[in-house]
Each structure stands twice: as structure tokens, then as C-alpha cells.
Image (cartoon, rainbow, N blue to C red):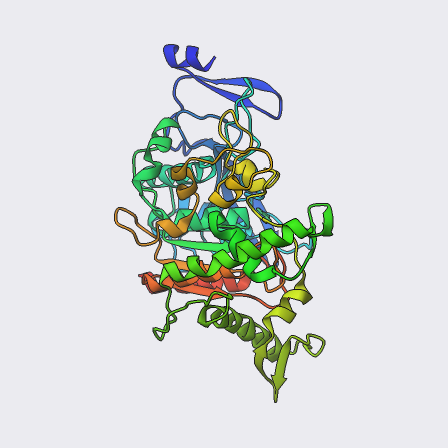
Length: 482
Ligand code: DHB
């Protein structure tokens, strides 16, 4: 059908939820239709918000999957009446861009509403502050076309989010909100995509993929990236994980529980030993210029630096009155957290994943599936796991591995990296090593970007748990940039 469509000038999309083919007449228009909306109102606290909901907008002209390459846009009604909300108006209102990607799976767009606990979600808070909300869906690793081909393997998720950003910029003049003030937000795999969106703006590597799906021919850089527990830097995550968890042999992940075998402990030792060379190759520095290196045992200034975020986090909790007396990894003197025993603390939080944590030797991880191709379900993405594969797995294309890792792009030539960053990774989060967000935040800082990074105490794997602070940060950032 798709071939016929190309010949006759219509686009074909596959609806995986109904198992049917959708024919969209001609190429999908990239021009925002300001008439196609419904009016909605929502009340929370003493506020009633009236807004226009533009839902399921296809943001590319050649969609591969019209169920996911879609965006919901929500705009305060005031902006259609020439009114202001605080200091914002139709021309300057920031655009909040939350994605709901999790597990690198296909994701639908989000909507303003309430969380399970009854509190407003991020989109609703954004709307209440006068932001335009644009939530893109994206293809993910399990998506298939009707012919059985995989359609959402890497780099589809980041390509789709870039296409959504391009749609907003392409329509900037006719849509309320400023495409020069896009703030991306995501959690976990979604935090990783948010970090990619922030890091890789306008880089040419993504261009062929964007052209293929008919993304608008314009810039895709963004103003700011908010990243909760980004599961990123995947090709270095196995060594980082063993640097942190080596010696803790019990694991418990996604229904699989057990103890590392002798063979796995050997692998853990090998991976741990590889991590210092990676950290040292980055040339990271503390704000005072101290080089953040590791010795061959994985000790040194970089480890102390990671510890310093945990200490600062424990101190913040202590200052708020949290009782930390049961955490024997901490040394507290006169109301001051003076040290953390890293090994003890890691035993306390426990290991989640077996080893290798990301590039599984038997190709069983979510990330193996992410790096599949149209015809191959799962692949390796590190030399180590390819060489030690128990399934004779193939290695993903080097360029695609690169395109999924923001570390290779930050501040490089031909790239417009977002100026403002907020990164959070909970102090109880074991989905990836603390080293991963520390490396990302430090690299950004070293390259001159504005980074707000914390490892909040007692917080596990998740996001959007501190929305008041998030939106305070966004407001300050928007003001600062004026
Ligand atoms: C997510 C969690 C993981 O542990 C992982 O490896 C990839 C993604 C997630 O929650 O999105």
C-alpha cells in the first residue's frame, strides 16, 4: 500500500491498535490548522482554565505510524483574545514539551489532567501558568508495520521528537507560544530522549531520517531540557553500573530475581575495570578546575564528586527534618553530613539489574531491543557484549549508537545544544549508575551550559515529583534568558 501511495500521492499509516491500515489523503499538511480544536475547561484550586485542545496532529508529512507521530497542543483561550497571562502573551509564551516515553516503548501524547494522587500533572500546571503545552507521541522499539517490519527501532524516538519540534517552529508565526522557548521534559527513557533533544539540536546526522518521514525543513534546537533519571549514555552504562554495583550480587529486575553466577561476577569485574578509562577519556573537571579522574580501582576525584552530590542531598533532607539516623552509610556530626560510605550506601539501595545491565549477553534487555533494525529484533551496542554474546548477536550500526547518546554531541560543531538544563536522578534509583547523570551534567557544565543538577534524597526511579521546583526553575530560566 505504501508503494502505491508513493506512486499515487497518498500516505499510508498502520494503526497497530486496530490492526488496520489508514490512508491519509495526499501528503499530510505540516500547516497548523487553527480551526480544528475543541474548547475545554478544567478547575483546580480556585482556578478555572479555559483552553483550546488540538489533539492528534500528525507532525510529519510522511508518517510511518499515524498513531504515534502525533502531537497534542493545548493553548490558553486568552491568547486568542489578545490577552496576557502574567507576563506571557501569544507571542512570547513558553512551550512546554512533555514526552511520555518509557522503556523506549512507543508513546502517546500527554494531556493536562490530574495524577493518581489528585494533584495536577505537569501539563496542567504549565497551562495554568500561561504556557502552551505541546506533547508529542513517538515511535518505540516494539512497533511493527503490517508487513511485520519493525518501525520504531533507534533512532526513531529522537527523530520523531525532533520532527515535533520542527513542526512547532515551522508554525511559530501562526501558533500562540514561542518556538524559541521550548522546554522539553521526560522521565527515564523519556528523560534520555529529552537529553538528546537538548544536546543534538540541528545536527546533520539526523537529517536523512527527518527527511524520510517528511519533517518540516527547519531548525530543531530547543531552549531548555528537563531530564528525570535519564537512561542515557547507553554504550557506557554497563561499565558505569559495575563501577557502582560490583560486589553486590543479588539483583531484582522486571520479575527476574537472583544472585549473580560466578561467570557473571567475572563479567562484573571486567566491566568495572573498564570504567576508569572511559571517565578519564572525558577530561571532566570540577567547577574549580580539579580533574575528575579515577584510578584503576575506580577510586579518585570522580568518585568523591559523585559522593558530594549524595552528601549535599542528604544534607538538604536533614535540613528539612528528615530522620537519617537509620542510614549507617552516612556520617553526621552536629547536624552536618560530613561523609558517605559509598560501598555501604550502594549495599543499602541494592542492585537492580544483573550484568551486563544494559547490553545483555543474551540480547534480552530493552536496550538490545531498542538497537534492533527493521528486520532484526535485538542487537548488541557495545564491543564487550558483542564479543561475549551468548546468542551470536550482531552489533548495531556505529552511527546509530552515536545518535542515541547525547555525550557525543554536546557543544560540538554544527550542533546547537540547549543552553539550560535541569537534571534529576533519585538517590534510591538503581536503574542506571549515579555516574551517568553526573557525567552528563558535568560535561554540559564544562562546555559552558547552565545546569541545575541534584540527586534528591530518598527518591527512586521516576519523574515529575517536584513540579513546584521544576516550574520555579523554568520561570527563572525564562526570565534569565530575556
Ligand atoms: C527505563 C528503565 C530502565 O531501567 C531502562 O533500562 C530503560 C528505560 C524506563 O523506565 O523508561
